[in-house]
Length: 490
Ligand code: FDA
Image (cartoon, rainbow, N blue to C red; front, side, top):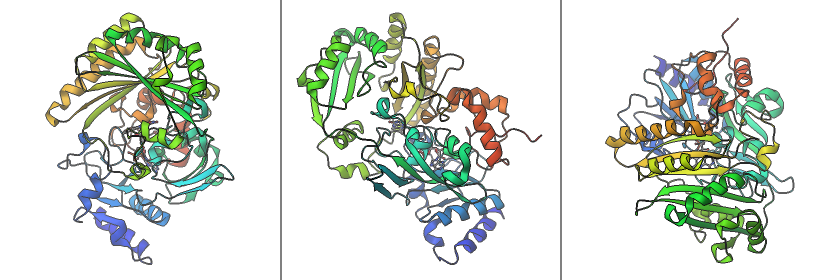
């Protein structure tokens, strides 16, 4: 009855435009499976025998389709999952809880971008590939829905802050099916959706973003050292200076296991300027790395975007618009923030564990710069001053039967890292969602329970997020395994 009721409701809403078949995909539609799978990035959630598949997939061309989907889902008790780029690390944008009927609103048809150079801003709909001069993440297929609403950092975030820090306006469909913009949603909701995760609050269908200036010449380098070549000493030094570097200079460290069974540390950098200025800067701040001009390649901003997205800088820009060229194996990730340099012994234990798992890697992203200047309550994203760097732990694999082995390994590594990570709370990045940190069960988790993971992602901002959520969606219609809960009715 629920599904039939929804179908009737939705069709009657769309009757005038007569577009139902294109906008609504049912389980019987021939393209159901291909559309559902289209943007899935993690094969852990590709198993089609799962009982947790959506009843319907709605692919709006127009905001009225989103409004109808919200109104009818509420009326007929279907849960909503919103998907932009489908990159959620735990599949929350397209997989549901068993026994909870739901539909997916997939925003892939809403991907237009209009850039207003004079006002240095751009309106983007929910799926995009890459904007010129916008401080967002390095992966080219990431969707702007989850990415911006969850924070969103990239190679120029030490100079310009997060994607969420550069939002000027947003348009959202709320729980009543109403369209709200910055002015009409009020400052609390506008605060919440910039870093608090969009999924708890509604369906964001457009962002107005501040574009930032980038110089015409940028310099990129990647230098790699194995443990035998002294990588550990360099990493120890990097830990103390990565966050203090000039904000035009971003150097992240990638730790991985080589075929020769050693750990290799790659220092990969983007500098907002030419080699001529970079070399003296490096000699002053990180001479141990021995950077020479031969290690450097000058390029423009969009080529650097290609590089950090894993393409060749000579590739056509078209690859950035292609949503299919992505790793589709299995993966599990976790994150930590580091406030004190990890000791040599600590690092030695880390290398030992990495060597047990040859398809693992770690990305250490330096903080500091603009990230230390923005207050930790400005938006819900709280990881600002005091952080040296963030760690992303990652393990990938290709055989489903090995899932338990690899997830077991990364959980043990996370346990090992406890003494070296931030404490009270042990903080985590929402963009690297990790359900090991805790989860809502069927949408009725108490504030106290949700606090366990809420504090890790949002620290003291979690309470305000719960207040905003209680005000805008008191019935907790928009919920998922890690959505913001509501305070109980008094
Ligand atoms: P997806 O569509 O899966 O949505 C994620 C969450 O947001 C879900 O809960 C979903 O319901 C909700 N949501 C999506 N669209 C919404 C909307 N329009 N309105 C309301 N809620 C919405 N991060 C980073 O900061 N820097 C980086 O460089 C990278 N790099 C990177 C590479 C790769 C390969 C992956 C898989 C991921 C990253 N990330 C990242 C993490 C990324 O920012 C994170 O996974 C985002 O949530 C992805 O946003 P999508 O819209 O693609 O995800």
